[in-house]
Length: 347
Ligand code: AQP
Image (cartoon, rainbow, N blue to C red; front, side, top):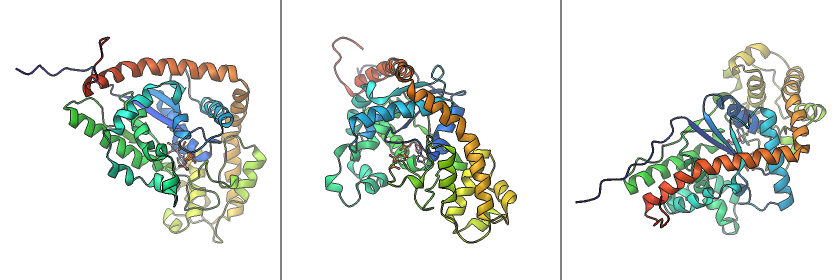
């Protein structure tokens, strides 16, 4: 007679995990595509927000810069409104269970799945042989980040959609291989109005920390003059602004600037077109600058204050790491049990 199948605690129904790479300045794309959503969602979900320093080192980081960037990005999250009492905020390397689960998931994910990841192709470029192994298996670590907490929802920008689909495939295969219903299939939460904020200098490229030109992005650390200058120099086209969204077809830079304005003002693209239809870019850019400076100014000031208060920031990260470890430990023990790792000290 076969032993009855072991049961495991039910997964949570409303747990969020998301992360940001501490690889440079947080920018408007991170803020509008992800962080602002995190702030809103923390009131309705149990939320875990992570500075993913282990992802950061898939490409070389200067150690001093990495430490500084973790603190600065943490200050950015707090300044944007993440409440560290309500949400768990920590840096990934302080919870070793992320790496442990990632190894198990390395053994679940298939090479063919990873070979299809466009971000690896983009980042490795022509030099695939010279890319780190970590960069290739990055999506497995991301799956581990999410599944370690049996998270149900993952608020991300559009660029992370493919990685999230992979996390769902990995969860499904794990459940299927071991005959369990253990990992929930995490749902993406994508803010449709600001899913992908584009570079200020090229409307076909994503606004990104790793872009070599600082003029392509608005950083959360930029002061009012810098924001004004970057918006003034943002690429546009010679036509006046359209009064309907259909008029933005093939006008990627115009669409991006109007999208940013709408996201900052909580207005739809239709509403922004109705407001600025017929205006010149010069007039619109003045309005956009005013809105951007008004919205980001208080966040930047608070971020600067917190970045200087390393004792406080470190205490937030330490508290978050301890809480995350407590959540992760029993889940990882159950995973060990499921895969058949002998646990001589008991589960
Ligand atoms: N441009 C964007 N528009 C909307 N959302 C974005 N996100 C990033 N860029 C945009 C979302 O922000 C969260 C953190 O992402 P990240 O740490 O990977 O940020 P990044 O700026 O994309 O970082 P890098 O190092 O510059 O990466 P690459 O080179 O890949 O662009 C995520 O939820 C992301 O979707």
